[in-house]
Length: 106
Figure 1 (cartoon, helix red, strand yellow):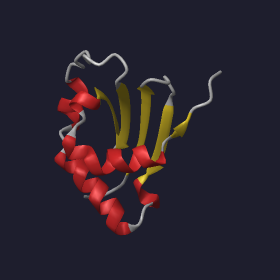
Figure 2 (figure 1 turned 135 degrees about the horizontal axis):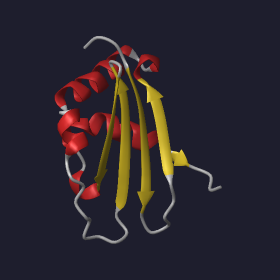
Figure 3 (figure 1 turned 180 degrees about the vertical axis):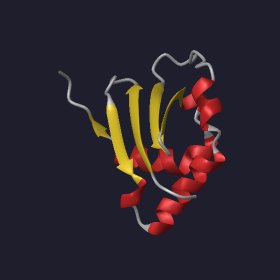
């Protein structure tokens, strides 16, 4: 579990269509929280999640997410919706969702 990760979660959709975003660097977390996030990243198969087809959500107003993970010199971009939320990443996604703030529209 060496190193750290920089992550960004962007959420779109929902009834209001509000774009929300959160970023964090695991090196800035408390050691126990960083360890939990790094274990979640280790447990998730980021390569598989990145390549997985994104199914169409049957719910028109569902939330859609993009997760960018910069770790070990590699960047992964994972797209998913509420219907296919990757459970191994739940500690990370929950933390980012709590920190998410609206992104101003241009």
